[in-house]
Length: 358
Image 1: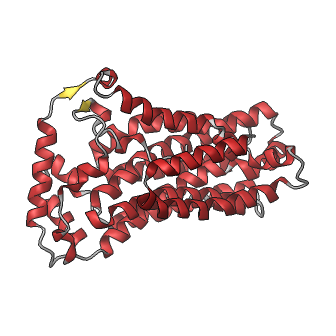
Image 2: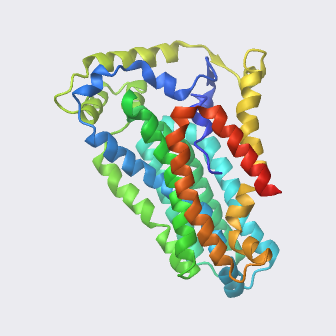
Image 3: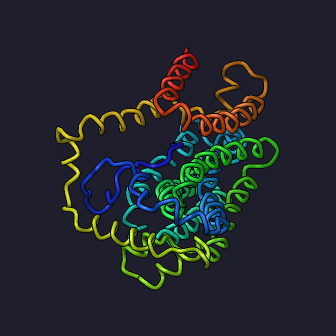
């Protein structure tokens, strides 16, 4: 589940694919030149990114919640192994549904309102977990948090890519994955020292920061241009680039790009399986399938019991070590990604997965 979202590779997948199908989302955003950004202020871009990645942090918090709380929840609510396994894994079902719906939602109401909706859904999920007296309410809460983070998985990286100038886009979008890892690590660490119900309340905090922060940042200019809100589009772009920045050329290029995309013919999902795209499709989807098939979610959801099962006297000790390792490794990967390229890092990652499995 720790991913940036397929949505950055396939724009418009929520209401019919647009040609070209598999262009890198970031390359689509690169119509603006560096000239627009030299004179502008980056403060609002950084602030907007910080607000948006509260959703990424929430993603990690939701994923990491079940690992340190397994023993406490099973004891308090008298759950069987099967019942807790359902609680731990039902988040993936909610996330799949949320991810499928996220594109249509964000295109309909905008990136900011999509994040608001996701935050509210996650808050209701956490409250259901906090007040739960049995497996049904526990599972319902976990499902809702999954639905919420499914929306976050799409809208957060898309929002960041759409507001960031070209020279900052790569670094800012990397923060999305870093904050997912930070969120899960914090959940592991706090879960070792506080009760499961209090940890559920802690999970609400990133959502509250997000809801408040959204009042102080602009909507995505590209979405505003797409829906024809010209005045709001101009105001949002000026707020992001600075009042003194020259945004005329960038605004014209964004509008030209939006019009060109809207003029492209619609296509069906099945067209992805045509000869032209089938190789790229299988490579991209295959990497995600094999990542998930490696068992990463099973380890993440049930880390405490996993470490206890292999002989550690205290499963939380292993969970804490797991949490501590995640963040620096993610930072190293982020720093090396643009220097070494994606393929070498993927090859190293697969070898590490193999060794870890052995």
